Image (cartoon, rainbow, N blue to C red; front, side, top):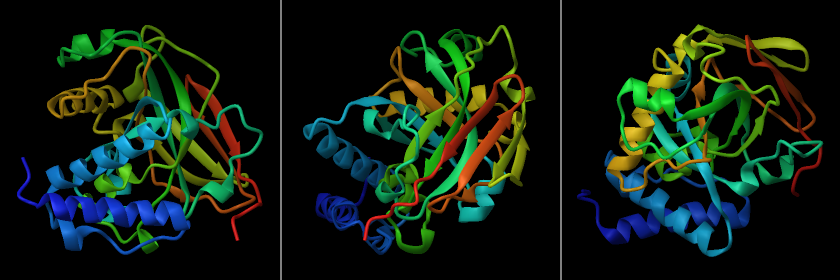
Length: 265
């Protein structure tokens, strides 16, 4: 339940839609939403509805702000989630399309693929819902100018989502423990970020359980076949046009992404 007016929600959605249409960051929306997180998710749902009406297909969710390092980077103190659409998956592309991005940053994560709907939220049920996991690079982006965000700004802006790339080594949870992994992320072959599975809410599976409960609470539970980006394992790094990002996640192997030099004029 939100105390913010439907008009304020509509105006916030229109502001972010304008950023997408004009390919230009806009002012934060917290002047309209205050600190009302429920209102911010209402904005996110409206933007999701708009994208779906134009043919975009929801293929999963992303969990954001799970790492203390990222929370410190952005000045927020709680996790959030957003929606993954089919056109956000750029795994099969030779290059990440920089012209689709405004202020991109990259972070390394574990991605879970679900084998059935998640309707129970205890640890055993959530674990049993996972088909397999892969290494992933999430390319986060913000439609809010200068990444000047609070929790309501990022939630409304689909949790600052952008694009994502999935690795090709699939492991079941019988083959590795997500909380035990180590991560190193390189930008143009220079070590730029490192962390562990425990940096993601103590355990990426705990992040998945948080998402399952929270999404169900909003009436949109996790479904079989969906991809879940479980949250950063270390600090995010800038991803400008032309850069090469490569992440190594123990057990899951490497995943990489080269960003195109082409940008929208």
